[in-house]
Amino acid sequence: MPARTPKNFDMLYRDHVDLMYRFANRLCGEPDAAQDLVQETFLNAYRGFKKFRGDAQISTWLYTIASRACLRMRRRRKGAPERELSLDEFIPTSEGEFRLQIPVDGLSPEEALQNKELRQALDAAIDKLPKKYKMVLVLRDMEGLGAKEVGIIMGLNERAVKSRLHRARLFVRRELSARGITDATDAHDHERLK
Amino acid sequence: MAKRGAPRRGKRPATKPPQHGKGRCLHILRELSAYIDDELSGDICQEIRRHLGACPNCEDFVASLRQTVSLCRHSPAPALSSADRAFMREKILQTARAR
Image (cartoon, rainbow over all chains, first blue to last red; front, side, top):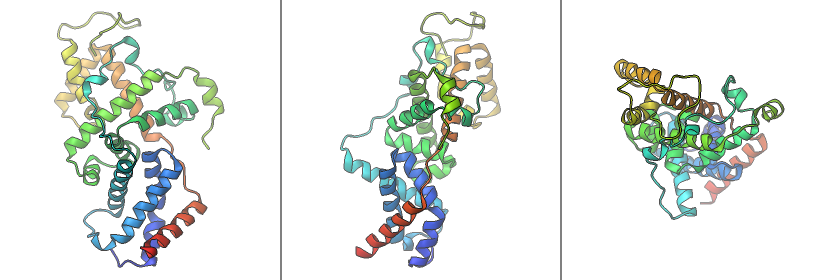
């Protein structure tokens, strides 16, 4: 990492701010908190320029800073420990729980997500996840990182990453299944992404 | 997935192979993310595929998990406006200089 100068910071900021904002938005679920997290992330990156040894990609380093900042921000807001997700709680107990009761059949994911109600249900399901599971899901399934990189960011081995990811996916699946969205066509036809 | 509720209504036959049971379904449930991420050995994948072919509920379950992952992967995220980008940059540098 080059010396800590406004010019070098500008390059770092310019190249990665959109990536970090997208990540922060997915973690926080709302724009103001996402902006706070991005500012905290780049402030810590600015101060930590000298500590970065170049062992990992810069984006991995920034994801790590953002993830830690997010956990700190959460701890400041809530004191209660996060709950663990058990596999047993995701075993369907009735016939209707095996399939998703949402309008996705025959549609590409992009088409399905033009349904505002479905987008909101998905966002709500992800938002309900305990933070440590949410982080793994966001990094792996939404940011598209590999399990090894997620492990580096979160300080976990790959096995733990995969275990958390599986539980997080089962949680979101169950939430979508329980929610049920029936009025697919109107919402799909008329609600376009902004 | 072993059936717990009322009998399934649908096109598939109601009969199950003798080796099928709830314990087998739970074993499959534990492996499903690794299965859809293609992280399992060929032998285990084949075993799971065999089970899915014989268990409509598990087949539905794995399809719904795939759909969930696919929706997450394609979920849009709002973009940052140029004004917000510039404002945040200024605020970060101000805070860094002040401390």
